[in-house]
Amino acid sequence: MRAPDFTHAACSGQPSEMFFPGGAGAGSRSSNREAKALAKAICSECPLHHACEMWARHIHANETPLDGIFAGKDRAERDAEMLALGQSRDPRARGRVKASLKRHLLVLALLEEGLSAAEIADRTGTSVPAAERAVSRARLLARVDGLDRVT
Image (cartoon, rainbow, N blue to C red; front, side, top):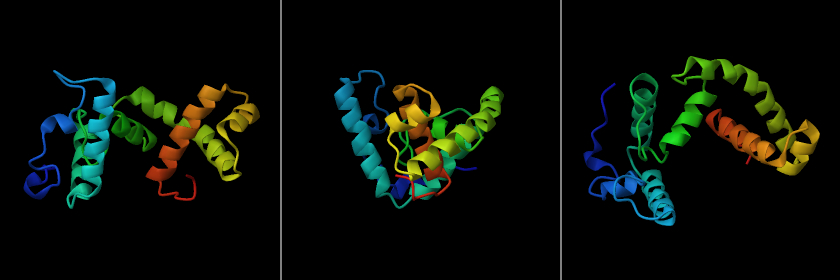
C-alpha cells in the first residue's frame, strides 16, 4: 500500500514535533500531552483522515509499527486497536485475544447495565484498577466494532 499524498493533509506545514511528541529534545510530560491533544484535534479535521488511518494500520500490521500521531492515534492506541482486531504482529497476543474477548463482552454487558468500574470489579472479582483497564479496553473494542451504545 502506498502512502497517501499528504500535500493537502491538515498536518502539512505543521511542526513535526507536534505529531511526534516525546522525541529528542522533548519538553515536559504536560507539554507532550498538549502537543498530542493538538495533533489529534488537527487530525480530526483532516480531509485525508480515512486514507491516513488505513495506511497507518497497514504499515503497523505489515511492516514496522509507526511512532507518532497518524489519523489521530498514537502508537499505543494503534497497538490496542490492532490487538482488539486480532491483527497484532505478536502471535502470542493473537492467542490471548480470544481468551480476553469473553471478558470484554462481559464488561460491555455490565457497562450497558449502567455499572461503574467499581461495581464491575465487585461483580467480576477483580481489583478496581483491573476493572478500569478492562472497561477501557472494552470501550475501545466497542468503538472498533462500531458499537456506539457503550460510552
